[in-house]
Structures are given as structure tokens and as C-alpha cells.
Length: 503
Image (cartoon, rainbow, N blue to C red; front, side, top):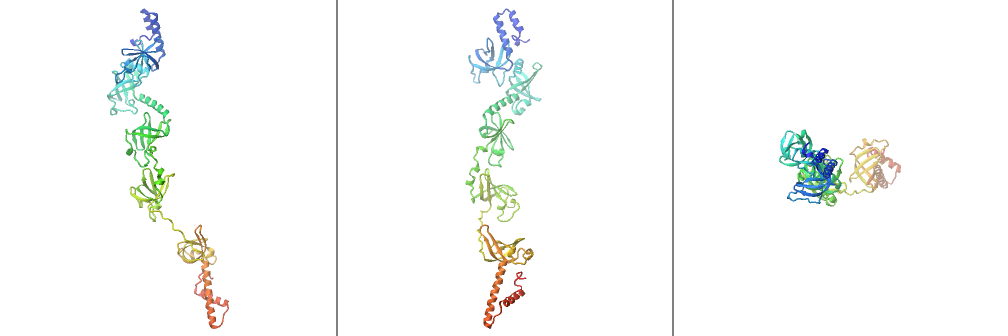
């Protein structure tokens, strides 16, 4: 049994009794033994400092039991001792050495200087300090108090690393993963400590973070889809769409690794450890004043940023794109695709047709908005010339020389029943019509060809009557009205001037 374990076992107590020690010493040693049995390696205790002697700090573990902590653990960088008698400290039990219970207050790295102290740290789960000496096959050689240890590449950091990671010559805290073959094989891990530290920070942040909160962070890495920022223990993702109101921005044009930022938390998923941040949310929404800024009929300018089959998008400002619909691109002519008129990157001056802040849409046009001319409808009884536009089963649509289109119902055509209007009056055929009805609300005009034919026949009859009357007055005789009509109609029928009206 090694000397450092003396005082732990009943055999040690018996040796002390054989040496003639007093009964009080037996009780003291037995108490220490019992206390050591109650404490397990790595167990944390709170105890009061009872004295400081040399390079040892003694703490009260209850009753007559005392523990020791190296004084070096309480000396700061400025060389000032930060502990006094009567102070209460928290320490972790390491082992029993030379009959004394040894504890440590270190969290980052226990100053192990021997194989036994490394073994004690291994059993207590306490980190040790080690210097990375060199890169060897599979990892690094690490010196812990002069003892040669091994740290695999995968355990030197959270993501592993080699010499180019800047580890050589530096001292870190390591956890002893394996202690075998009486110290001939000691495997260390720095990653497990970093993971433990990160988890502690995550748990602390979990209690304080909430959606909508503004947080400080440091850009850690850049990706095509966004950027990762370190919030002090947990990484948050800033998606590319949340970096700027400008949807076409490249994350690398706005952010850089190491840059300090302030962002807003927009989502938290602790189960999957996903935290989403937004820089855009820290900026004013350009759409908030879009309707006031881009008023109807105002003239604006910007570059064409995207072409689509239905139109072209114009960048008016970061975050606001307006659409020129394809129907507003061709200046009255029909086009099949916007590329026939404009191209991406082209700077254009356009007119605002409408601005919708709620739906985030702005409609633009290459030409100013033209108000439709006010329609002046004809009066009932007026007669117009027109051209057939379309023949339907119920009538014919006729465009009059005034530009207005009206409907001639079949019953107003003045044609015999069964007449094929499609053959008799094809599109483009000309005819004269009379207005018989006007709907000023719906801007509809009802026309009649029959009324014109009837009026023409009546006018001719009246004209003939007058002519006969004048001839009779000169000759002194009158014929019957029937004779006059029959003669006149026979004459007109022969000339074919009542086409389709008299069978």
C-alpha cells in the first residue's frame, strides 16, 4: 500500500495504536476515516476556512475533520491572496493524501503534478490542466504535470482540430477519459468540458431568452443560406431573408465573421436547439409608408431586377419591388414576354398605378394612366350607318360610325323568317339602323334595321303621293290611292331597291 493511502484503513489505525498514540488520536483518525468514507470523489461541499498555513488552506469538514486546499488556487493574477480565515468556500473532494482529505475549488483545471494526482482527478471527475506539446498520430501529446498523456483530434475541441487550429504550446483544461495500465495510458478530452460548459450556458440562456427579445451576438460563420451568430453559449441562425429588407442581398455583403451585431429573436426551439434571429426586424419596415411615398400617378424610377412571364419587377428601394404587368409594358401593342421590351438591370422610369401596403404590392406602368373617354350615347330615333361586328343566334352586333356598338335583335332586322343572317350579313357588311332604345346605366344601345326600311318605304309613299297630287292638279284627274301604291311598289320592286323587305 502506498504512503499516500496511509491513514485511510483500519490497519493504519491499528499501527497508530501500536505506536502508543492516545485514545484521542484514535478517535481523530477514525473520524477522518469515517469522513473520507462519506465523501466520494468529485463530491462538492461547503466549508469554512479555519486556518492558512504555508501553502495549505485548511477547511472545517465537521467535527474534528479537516480538509486541505492548495493556497495557489486562491491567488489571483495580481499575486493577491483572495481567501481569509472564516471565509466559506465551495470545494470538490479529490482524495485522501498523507492522512489528509484533499479538495479543490478549481472548475477549469486541477493542477495535477503526479500520476497519483491524475488518477485522483480521474476518479473524482475533476479536470486537469495540460499543455499541448505536439501533434502525433491520431491526436496530440499533452503534458499534465510532466506526465505524458494523449488527446485524440476529435476531443481537442467541439469540432476537432489539428495544428492549424492553434493548439500547440497552449494550456487547456482536460477531463481524464481513461486511466489505464497504472498511468501508462491516459486519454484526455477537452471537448467534453466544452460541451458541459456549453450546456450550462444553454440552460442559463433558456431561462432568460424569449421571442421578441433583442440580443447581442457575434457572427461566427457565413453560409449561402444565412449566417450563424454566437450568443455566448448557443448559436443563432440569421436566415438570408432576415438579414435585410432587400430580398436580393448576399449575406456576405452585409455581415462578416467576428462582427458584433444586435438582433431580434423571432423563434425558439429548445428541443431541437434552434434559435432564429433577425436583423431585418431591427430596421423600419419600408412598406409602412409605401402608400404615402408611392402615390397613384406619381413618377418613379429604378432598375429591372426580375422578369417573369406575367411582367417585370422594378426595385424602387431596398425591400420594395413594384410590378409592371405585361399589359402595361407594350405601349398598346401585344407582347408575348417582357424580355421583348425590357431586360434585367435596365433602369426605367415608370408610373404608379396603385400601392397596397397591406398586401405589399405596387402596380406600375411604362405609360401614364389614361382615363377612359366618357361614352356619349345616341338618342332614340337617330339613324346611323354601321358595320357588322358579330352575328349571334339572337341578333347582330353593329358598330356604328360613332364608335359605339349596339345590338340589332332578330325581330328588328326586317328580314323574312328563317333568313340566315350569317350568310346574308357577314362581319364587315354595312347597313343603316335606327336607335330604338338606350340604357344609360349599362351603356347599351338597341338598334333596328326594320325601322329604317319602314321609314324609307313610308317616305317614298309620301313622296309619290305628293308627286301624283301635283300631276293630278295639272291634269285635272285623280287615280285611286290603291292604283298609286300598286304602281309605285311595282316600280320599286322591279328596280330592286327594297332588297329583302318586300317578298
